[in-house]
Length: 237
Image 1: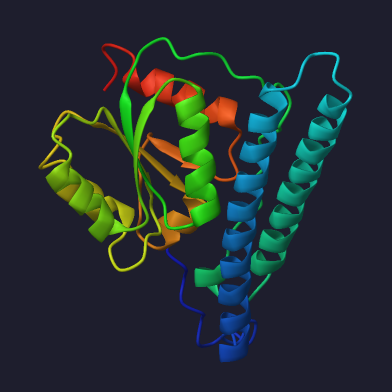
Image 2: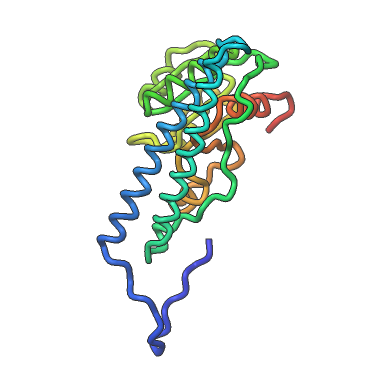
């Protein structure tokens, strides 16, 4: 992120600083987009789960496709909201438009190539329930937690190893990055996949760099499974 230059005191072209009301509006919009993307994640996931149970000739499959198309339109709306947010006169509120949006096309999932146990830590009940259901239906063993305290409780009582930590970054009280550091003391060999409804750019503005193991919401279930397969593949870092 480039450091902003200070306005030239001798120049009359410098823009005035943003008003507090503008800051508050931009932050509120960012929070709304975050929540909207969580809702879209849940809708996309549950629609995919329903679609998997339908026969190829079932006319309801078209209904599922229409639901997923609506999710894609909702994701576009979220990007427009972010574009509005980026138009504020404050650097901390600027979030550029993401050029590439994941589509819901090709939502049928395949069975995983290996067995694994995954701990899902997500404070949004809809997203957590959807994620766990998708993982279980694709052959993975799961543990779940709604916050850091519950996750650490799972770590103390679960005697079997965990292969992957699937953790939301924006957890209450203790964020996902801090939680993972604690959980790695119990499961040092566990792989990591972070998720968030914020973009990488928005997270970087807050000083949060999740690395390559990151999945932005709303993600398609097939994308989740593919990322997990890649991370758990032998020889992956």
